[in-house]
Image 1 (cartoon, rainbow over the protein chains, first blue to last red):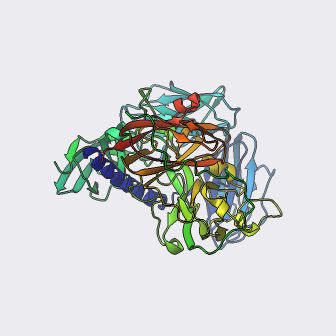
Image 2 (image 1 turned 90 degrees about the vertical axis):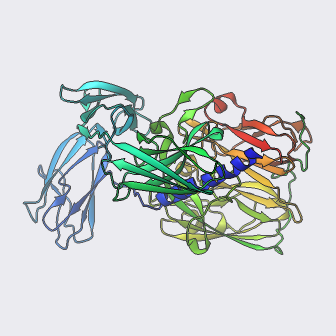
Image 3 (image 1 turned 180 degrees about the vertical axis):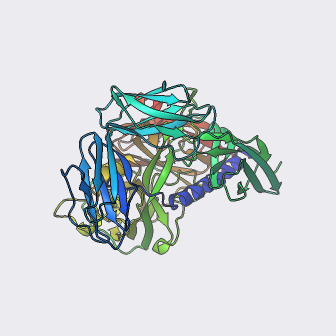
Length: 292
Length: 312
């Protein structure tokens, strides 16, 4: 009887997880499958003025102003026609190097495209000391080419992780930072532009309140981290460990609140994660929630 | 422990007998609203472990962005679960379980809300009757909008469940994005009952498919992550089994047997790409059981789960 009730509770928890996932799916984290880099043209500037792309990538310039512009190489090897408002121009860069360009109609408008054989993506969120953090990148190199991730925390670059290039040109490697540092990816004689990973030591407190079958868990992040992701996990025997049952964004008050209906008492904890809802940055203590 | 489960219905599987019967159209009209939506952080192993091997997994290995079929309320009002709450089925992958009976008309309203990759998508259905405009299969210069529903656009697939449609059948993206979509979990099942056939108390969906470095069931890998199916002694349970990808799999449930298409008692049954079968029994054996693909390398790469039967 007890196990049947547990199954019902587990199903209810699964529903909570699904709801969180659906909300996440509609946040609209868009990723353009077209050009590798997009540059906007305002009335008097390219934004961003410098972009890093991989050899073979295409850059698209979109004119978001009412003035016409051009995108013209300093060395005269390539140029767009006149690009009117709302129109765009794309150019593919096959060879590594830095390529400066300007607008023939407004010569003070300048930009640079840096073309590399290996790129390391800029970390989008802070990491945590002593916790694994996945670095991602792309390479215009054959599949299975070895890639070394190097870190510089002030004493020069030192290797910290190894990986290989996938068939699609992507690679990923886990690093375990202790403090903020600069990273780069190296393969043979090619090295990516450096990227900085900020490491913050944050704490997460959790409190649980049970009234009948209704449970509220409040997680508080310090220092304040509005917009950060917090996942509520429960220890479920059927799931062989901690299982995510809901996900929430930290509010302006640096809190995330979870409300559940439970049939039984469970061990629960809050986890501060990257936006993937899985990479752990900080854990709360375990709280016991649900009817006794 | 009794070794043999009572067989209520043997194989309810698809295509056991070839038939050219014309579709019947005197049944109900069933409308489903489905969309292709981003699942930007799909996690193949939320517990981050292969519990049987005792190894931990990293989110960098198990989390990836993908696009999935999601069920909606009418006119795509708001998203709802692909399967009923409490069914113990996995949500999002596979897509909505589309249920009907022989003789029913199905209108599957599909909208492409892929803001992740901005790719065209479609739905292509096996086992039912339809005109070419509802085939959903891309053929350059031949197929129409049904096969290449662009982001923001929609299409209604008009299907009929014939007498020869009874069983479970796959559906999947068959647009120009088909290869990437199927690798990311854009597939689901139709479950069609005969007229007067009783619906099982529990209906479990099992889709074997490779995903990234793992072999998954319903887009999840390793025990605890794959669906934890549950039933109670005395219930009639049905397993809807399907394979996607390019490999064959062997579906095995511990402690139970059923009767296959050839009338043999079996406890393991092979399913190939886009093949399906449904099996039923009346549950009599309480306990925690394993279900898995018995291709050893697949099982070790994640194609295994647990099935819990409790006493009443």
